[in-house]
Image (cartoon, rainbow, N blue to C red; front, top):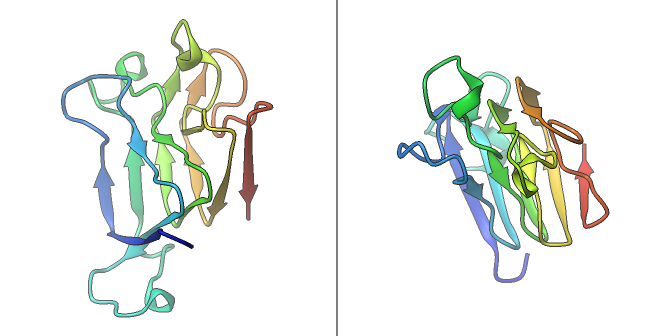
Length: 144
């Protein structure tokens, strides 16, 4: 990945904001691979266990269990980015503009190809389109 790199994320639950601003998402960076599933002692990517070390990206930024105040999109994709080894939950794309057009879990507005592997999607919703990954004509996801 030219100009990219890797980010390793330890098990746990992470939120894109603590401000309650529903428009804030985890923003992937072009050419960067984001890997979840680490215990914190690994020295090599092959040592991680994403099934045992559950790494959650959650859009449940407001009142717990009330999705009306959740992030519109938990993750915003980017060109040639990779997201691998996460549980993505709690996105609620129910807004009036692009925030209601799908992708409660992952959305992408950059006419980009996003690589998605070893991810679990739970409890995401939308007003229109797919609740998990926005796959309109300006977005492509390589899912494995």
